[in-house]
Image (tube, rainbow, N blue to C red; front, side):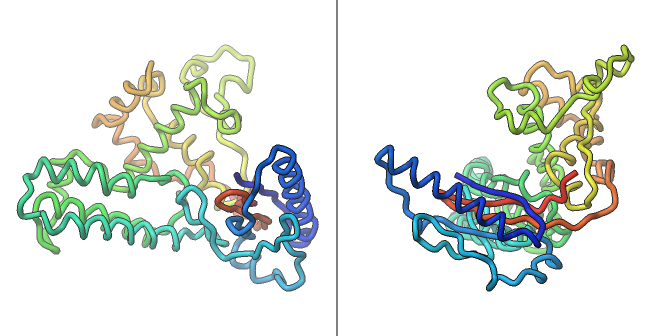
Length: 316
């Protein structure tokens, strides 16, 4: 569970009070239903830009409490395997992801001379790639340096499969595997997630309400009304422009019309990987609908069981 609230830095006291009230209600509810909550597994974090965080005096902030148990404010927390740091720079998460991949690779490396290529491909796809792909839609604002690090992790897998040396070029071998580079692979995952959000009935409502088709914003009968174009969310910060809500819309609107009108997720996945559609994903640079940046602060506390978190999204 995640509890979160958003507030300017000057009203963090009020935001923490709101969180404490919610935690108190959770304690009362769990007690009335015979449940016991472990406060030791609860984490708290305040998320904001580096400039905003430097202006906060943490010693003056009230304590985050869960039934008389003090919850310390951490620099980073872990929720569902994703490590969230106080500035959302994703450095700790990328580091942990790299550690997991090299640990898995070390166990496979001893067998690389004995396994056939087909078996190596199956092992990498079953053990390593799920680690690389997991929750990649969450960290869209990673730096170019972090993106290169992820690319190198994929290159390690390709070198293992084909027995390549450290400085051998791997581009042609990636084509043999029909793998996309990390940036395009992530874009494909974004589009698949967006398709599920738009057209799968049991998608959570809080995701569906983030997206609206352009033709629903007017009553005119235009030729473009059947093109299934999405309306970009209004925003005023560079940070929010790199969020799923904005990046996914830009990618979707850049696809050919027939791909957007795919009748099923399987057809959409297949058509999205053909050479024609891949061009649109490749040429996308995330620059559309971007406006001037604005600062914002958020109070948050994410945790494994009971958490409070609020990304500083610089909203609308």
